[in-house]
Length: 174
Image (cartoon, rainbow, N blue to C red; front, side, top):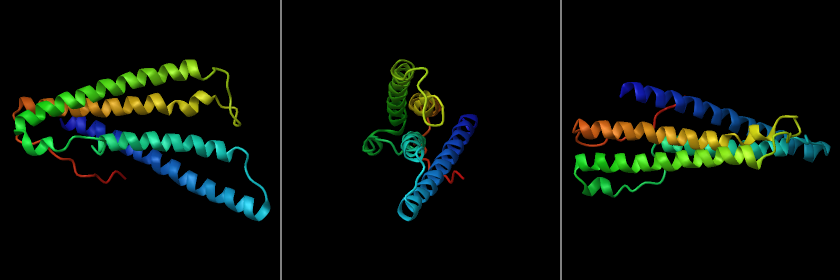
């Protein structure tokens, strides 16, 4: 279990680092754009499209972190009414189902990436547009991975007859 937790925590640190990098870049770039427009009637043509793409990346990475921290949608009232061992079994089934759904969304997003965005389509930086939208299948894939890791943890706790599911305190990821 410690190995799975180490994998999940390492992933979370990378995801958090990317969010911090993107958000910092977005704030600075937006500020520079406002100053350039208001004071000099100038601006970077590429900044606004880049900021839009970065918002999508930050949104998906935030959803991935919410999944890791178990801050996604959940049914918490079961914690009060079910026996501890039954609760582990229910959480195993729910997390497993969520992992399958996220995996299917990963496949659909990957298919969209391949079929919905033309292969030669480029942006202002002469980069493929698929690069910007790659976060959709990657994000759903990471969400699926986090659900899989938690499914394994809950099933292991069910087999070991652990009393209560451990509630993860929000960790300091940086």
